Image (cartoon, rainbow, N blue to C red; front, side, top):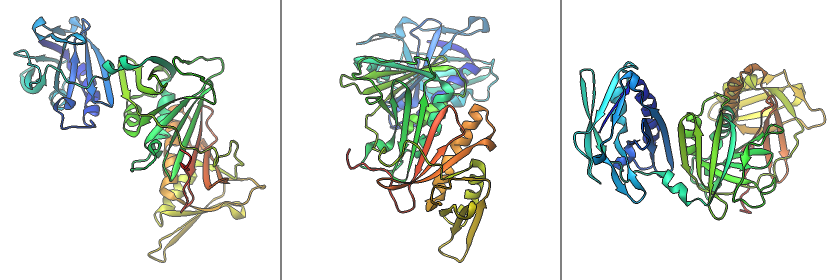
Length: 440
């Protein structure tokens, strides 16, 4: 077996693969550290990396005019239950290290001296110019191929939306997903709810919640629903992304306005088991878990009173200064200004600063509550990133701050300067809990 490709093609495909294998679920499994090369289609090689949760593949086309070529003898073909398979696997990290820094037009040759035996690790040779490298390899059998599992699905539904929007949704909500063990599984995932008019996203733990709604443009028809009964605003199609899969998807998405297609593979019960995403010659497949979102409608109103409206950048700057003196920040909007105060309980040090360029609702009581300063800062940062995506000046970002008391007291921060995404963040006042999971 012999493959000759330009270094620039290998570098792109392998750098993407490396990000997947370095975060594999079980690095002790040898093939989980390999990149799989599939030669099924003439003139194309599919570079695939992944494990039982994530598969990411990139198609590379062979261009003979630049000196590229591929030879895959029949002796390398493996007969399996799914047919005749034309593939090998190679140690991903070693492959990356071998081609990193090469001139893009350098021709790199990968070749096997002998046919790899099933279940046996062997080696392949990489050569370019005056360099020779030996890397671990196999025939690829036993690799975690999620695409084969897609056959288990009984129906598929699809959703199309701009790549930039999907990236923005994830980056502005994923940071709220819990990292710690919890009795409520939904707090470990980003939950997507698809309705006939919008895509709703929930991410949160017991200290903070991120809610993001993307309303589909009027007259558009971005989805097809199959195998899911009673699809409506009240009965949405739900799927979950773990923090790991969400982070991987966010990393791979660009800020282009090109459409990406999400293919949801449903089980008999109507749950989405696998999510397949297609974009620019790349394919991602995620093995999903299912859980319902926690109930939050009883603590968050549909309309906010805009207790205080202020500029996000000034608020972030003064929050950052305040947290140098204490983790807990006191917010008070009395006397026509928003005052931020912090103190160090171990010393006599204290800090106080004001925001004067604000709007106050005269019909509401002044804000007077304590919040975790770090959590407040963390929710402003993705809004700044979102403004970059939209090419909007960051100094125009405005926030509505609200103290809401329904079933439990919460502090709601709503973005009011974005016409594309409707985003609300919930922070629990100090010593309170926002998410009620008692009815789940």
